[in-house]
Image (cartoon, rainbow, N blue to C red; front, side, top):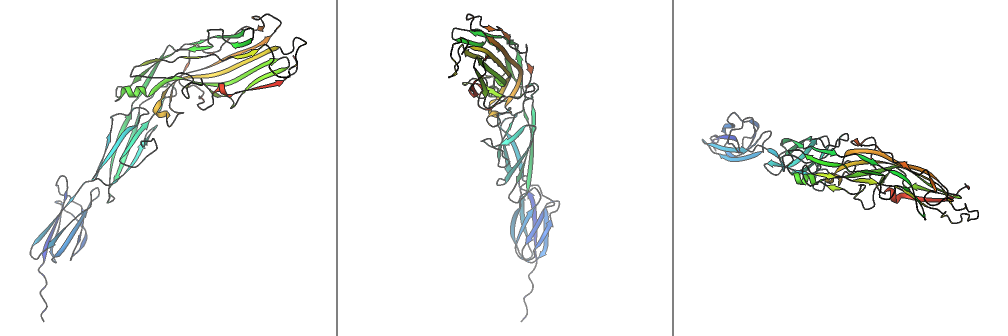
Length: 436
C-alpha cells in the first residue's frame, strides 16, 4: 500500500498591535502553539512574526511585552494559504488624581489611582517631612485604589505652619504581573498667624482679710495675670477651601502648673497641700474644652482675627481658727490661732492654635505655639490675731512675677496635656506640729 503524500504546507502571519493606537509593536515575545510550535519569537518593526511552510492545522499565538497586557489569538493554517492572527496588546498605565490641587494642613486630601486595564492591584508610598497616607478612619494605608494624604507640622520657633511637599508614588500591578507607575508631588499649603496686643499685665497679691479668715490672692475685682492678644489667621492664596480650612483651627491657651508650695501654720497644726500626680500638671478650668485652660475660639475664615483672653488668680484661703480636731483649745488665747501662711505657685502659659482634625489622632503635635511665658505668685505672711481684722497680716502685698510681653514659639517647656487638672489633684494633709 502506498503511503499518502505529506500535506502541502501553509503559512501563518502573526501581527502584534497596540490596542489603542493600532501602531505595530516591535520586540514582543510571541509563543506559537500547534503542529509546529515555537516559543520566544520576536516581533519585527511592523509587529510581525511570519511562519511559512508549516504543517497545516490549528494554531494559537500568545504575545507579551514588558508594560503591556498578555493576549492570544488563533487561526487554522490550510495548505497553500496564509492564515493571519492579529493580537492587540494594551499598554498598562496608572494615573494619580487629586480631589483638590493643594492639600490643607491636617485635612485629608482624597487621592485616587486609576489603572488601565482594570483588575490590578495598587501599592502606595510617600516621602514627606510630616505627612502620611491614611484610610477614611485615619489608619495608615498603602494599598487600594484610593488613599488620603494628611499632613501637619507647625514650626515650634514661630508657631506658623510652613508649606511642605509630599511625594506620592503608586505602583499598579496588572493580573499578568506587569507594572505601571505614577508619581505626584503634592503641596500642603502654609498658614501664618499674626499676633498683636500681646502685652501681659501682672497684678499684686496680698492677704485679703475678713471676719472669717484671710485669703492670699488679688484684691476684689483684680487679677494676678491678664493678657488679651489678638491672633489673625492668614491662609496661603493656594488654599482651595478657605472657610473650612480656617474653621479647622482654633485659638486658646494652655497652662501648666510647674510647682506649688501651699502651707498654713496654726499654733499647733500644719496644713499642707500636695499634688497627685506631682507637678508639673495641667492647669485648667473644669469646664474648659480639653486640653485648653479656658475658652477656645475657632476662626471663621481667612484673615479672621480673634482675641484670646487669658487670666488667672490662684489663691490660698485660711480661717482664723485651727480646723484640726484635737488641736489644743484656749486658754491660753493663742491656742488654735492662725500664725503663718506660705503661698508659692509657678506656671507656664502658651498661646496656641490647634488643628482640630489633626488633634483627633495626634493631640500632642496638633498645636502651633505662638507665644509663651512663665509666671509666678509668691507671698509668705505672718499673722497676729490679737490685732483688728484688716491689719493682722504682714507683709501686705507682693508683686506677681511675669514678663511684660511673652516669648515667641513654644519656649523651653512643654505643656502637660493629660488629666487630671491641678485644681482637682490637690490633697490636704493636716498634722500636729510643735507649738509656735
